[in-house]
Image (cartoon, rainbow, N blue to C red):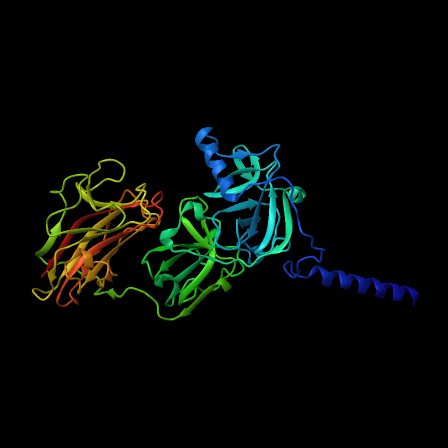
Length: 476
């Protein structure tokens, strides 16, 4: 009997241990601890001041990183990242103020999860002695120096560098439009108003998830559009995020998230801690209308309009032949281009790009003369496009029936996408030229204009270039 009782006790203890081991890793709260106001000693440096020191080091001494040895300097910041949903991993993003922030920094820490002790809004201090600052994936980052790189702070050293304050502040998102993105504003918690996900990704039977598509290897990258500006940026979600399989919201509205770069530090990305900060309540989307007559089997023998650009002067703006070459934003224009190496042109081609222009935004139009679609039948359009790493920039071919021919009214006219036309994609081979297909225009009545519109991403350091050639508008 005694042995039987002992056996039952062992079974009971084993069951308790098993039940305890089945508790989810994220089913815990902030440890109960006595909070005390922290009064750091030493010299405080702002996050913006830290950035300035690094840039000075890179300029004067040509060192990619700046290491701190014997120093009493520290910085203060407020946590704006939250790894609870798995969209951040082993990093804290700090900004210098809970409202109207000006600078942010990423602190690399070999600990997960971090939200237990360093929750959203928590004020913390980071002691700089023994740390290194540099740019990791394009953003200002702090960690342990290793061969001109910034590595993660080990868990055993965490409390040596990071001190948790009693204050947990309300973080007020900084209103920001895509055209206002800059490298200095990365690592900030921002609010984007009047935005939506691209219709090809958020609508229809093939509606995409945040990051669970077959081609989402490390991150799911989706197109986030500004309805007020008519430009777009990349919205990124980790494939390890808990919400990766959630479908993109279909509506339009407001989003709170963090501004950062992609892994390569080449393109602005917007990232959320979790989908609760995406509030797309309006069903009134700002999608452009489309003209889609399909693809024709053949094109007719009569040429209504054509241009192979051979009469243009290399390096000069496209002129003549009834073209309207208009700069809506920035300083770059469609110009004649020739090359027999690299991205080979087809003789002389039309080219538009804002790479290294220094412009905050670039929008360029190339518009045909007016076409009367009632004067003939069976109209078709053919052209070719190529790119030089288009990155965040885009090219569209559009039609307008209400533009009055005045360049000043281009932006306010109604422009519909000729959706059947193929335009080179960013991941297409940048050396090759791609046919648009024989785009059927026979469903159009009245008069109108055809335009090629280039839009830069807002970061001219990474925007690419498009080439256009062999345009033919024919009829039967």
